[in-house]
Image 1: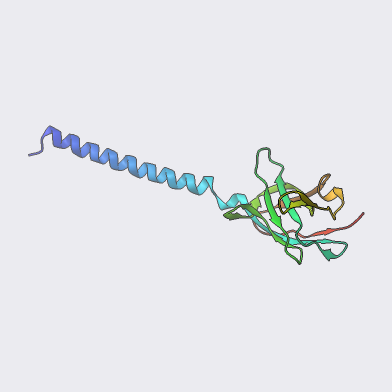
Image 2 (image 1 turned 90 degrees about the vertical axis):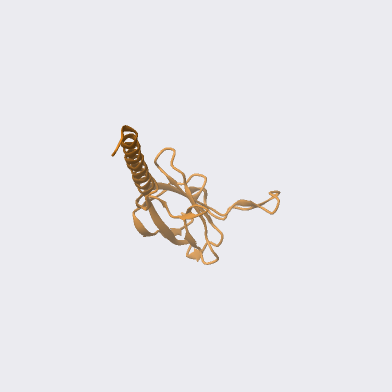
Length: 146
């Protein structure tokens, strides 16, 4: 015979199960939407200046969207780079970016500074704009003095 208390326990267990399942589903949806790979594109390329690779150039891709975080890269000896959004995530947010490329930086203990090899129009006064699309993006920069 099923008494009133057993009915309440069964109803509570069913409610708890539904609530837990709903919470799990909400969590899955939030993680797949909020952290979607669809909002990032993978970006790599090469930086040259007057036809020569720019070794150790620092690149910054700043999204035009207000409040969005930039992506960064440092070119290798052949001028090749791959953008990183964070320590564990490669790529850049999809959309239009203002790009700055510089060779100047502080080294050692910060007392010494490497001289800028590129014109200001590529860094301090940059007007370089590039579009990052979903998927793989190869964005080369063939920089000149003019």
